[in-house]
Image: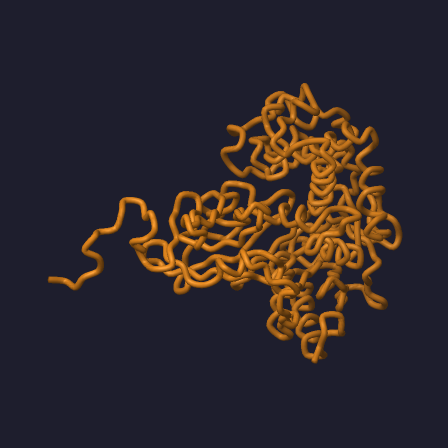
Length: 461
């Protein structure tokens, strides 16, 4: 029996190598490197290169572009968890005078602040950051293109603003805060704002000829929090494990789950494609899997980090070309290959350590009108309510310690579940946000809204 930390099977490793080999060849990438994480540990590294000799390994740096945004988002979430800001705060409260102050911190994280996608010309990715020394140079005279909070509109300047927010509240440069609060605690020693050898050079590949052109390497200056970082598959594998599980030295599991939760309104095309955005993390549904992570690109480089949380598998793919291989598809395929070839082995079932009588009394079958639901007491001390057949509203609930329970997800998130008792103390029904759940469909002894016909159930006359 394989355990999560054992090496992948030979057939799985060959399938992974085949996938990145096809991507490098068909995408005409000078080099392409990848890693797979399972059970919180890197279990495979692979590389393909056009250069004879030793290929790049998990310690060679590539520029990771917008994956930098996820690092910046983690810094902002740390500020929230420390009580230095609230995600509902207006930007103006902490960083006045930007021209985008009516947007909230959450809206900036989710790209729903209405800001422009890019800074004013010239194109910031291929020009020195010294051309935009101040925040106003990044945002321009009219920062807002759309009503605040109404639509998802990806914004690089938005993450520049978040980087400035981090600097304001920490009283230190973004890069310094990043190193102290994320890179050092997680052991990401090969992640940096500037390239550190060994590092890959960035190339453009001619669209109609197998010819190369070196891409310029620019320091993004103020725009750094949106895309400056260099990293390796080794470091990003560790970062992926953190984003899947949390690490209390940096950010709790609850807060990284919040980052992975959709936070932006989806447009029609997004609904059709199964894509969304959380707080600094992209979300997609592919091959029946929910995948989270982020992509990145800058002239000369492509990057992708993909996490299949339910499968406990993540993939990192990096290439040193401006365009060519579709790394999002490659990352999703690497997750799928491992998940299908070597399915996750669930933890052994274990009974509850202690049985809470008040919770156990709620277990069993309930009816909302004629809809049958089951309520289970789970090993983590929660209760779970869901339909017995077909689709429908389901949620887990956490005890509030006073005999009531609060919903944790879905339609019932934040709603109160209250067991209602008869005068003799016996359980009558459940009140869930005004919905009455009874032990029998339309129980005549429960206060069903609208009442129950006194003649009861009958056949069709």
